[in-house]
Image (cartoon, rainbow, N blue to C red; front, side, top):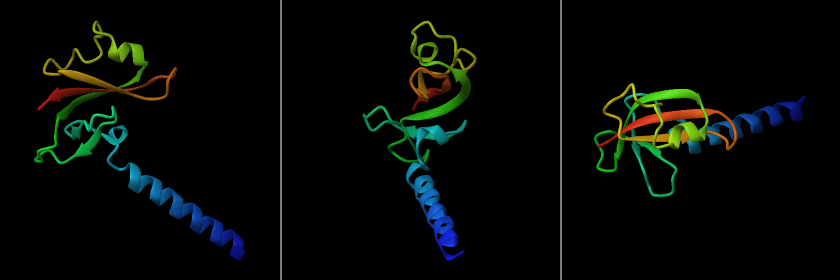
Length: 104
């Protein structure tokens, strides 16, 4: 019983750490959030009033593959005419989410 409780506690700790270290990842971004591009192609959520806010999320579209998102002829973000960039997030070869962004 003690071992089971210890394992449950350890699992909770690991899940909490995973959330803490990924809380500002673009995968958690919602419409209205601001993102910073540190140059490593991994956008991070930041405060919109900060000097490091590079983009505002205008929309989020699920179920798109990477080719649909990055093609210069893509219509994924067309419903947000102010969109200047798109950012695809997901696993290579699978469907993912597209963030439609406006440069700040």
